[in-house]
Length: 304
Image 1 (cartoon, rainbow, N blue to C red):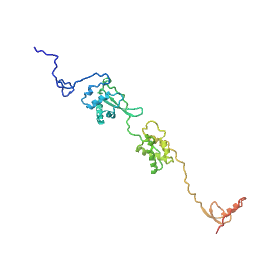
Image 2 (cartoon, helix red, strand yellow):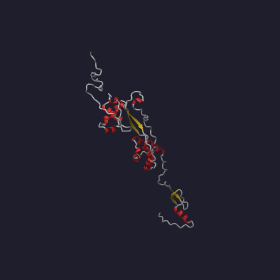
Image 3 (cartoon, rainbow, N blue to C red):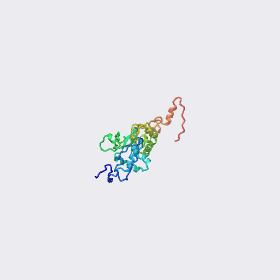
Image 4 (cartoon, one colour):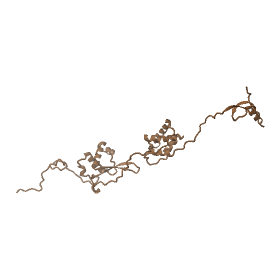
């Protein structure tokens, strides 16, 4: 009677080509010598370590990221210093993990206004709508991205000088170019500088020294970062413009006095004198000498 032994092992079968991870029973393949971990270990899912599309570098990098404590560095520079692979290969592996849902990189604004990138490593990829308890990676609080800047608004108008002399405009240009030495935040672009030059020139032509103009533009600046320093400088140039200097008439030669020949009312002698004189010099001298207490005047003899 033919009997079968139910405990006999079945004939070994080869693993199909499309599933190379299937256990082989012909004596070859891998075996495991496992020891139970009680400290310093991380749980890694087979969906990651046996992923069919991820590269070996991406799989190993994801395992490393999942083993890091919260707050550890995970940027390309830090990872390049840790592993022999170069920044190009590490950056490509990070993009693989990000494309398959094992990594998220989010931008956050700090209290000081600085934008930083935060790396989130997920031990199970996000696929469709899944309950947060099933994903293994709690949803992070997303900070809304800063609004896109569609373009700068026009700068405020600045005073215009009465003169466009090249020397005056060059002095104004040099003054604006040195503002960054007093405050690094006052680094101006070429376009902003060209807009502000006429305003500085208007101050200079009002007898304001360059040091006084620089002091007015660089003192009492706000402590927070200047998003657009050119707009602040334009406001100051327009709002604090000093009055023009008082009018100063240029000294010139006195108006010419008109002389004409006339007859003296005292001696009827002809003489040349302004219209306000009606007597010749001799008659005027005689009249002055006739006044009491006036010493007689002596004039050099006149030659005729």
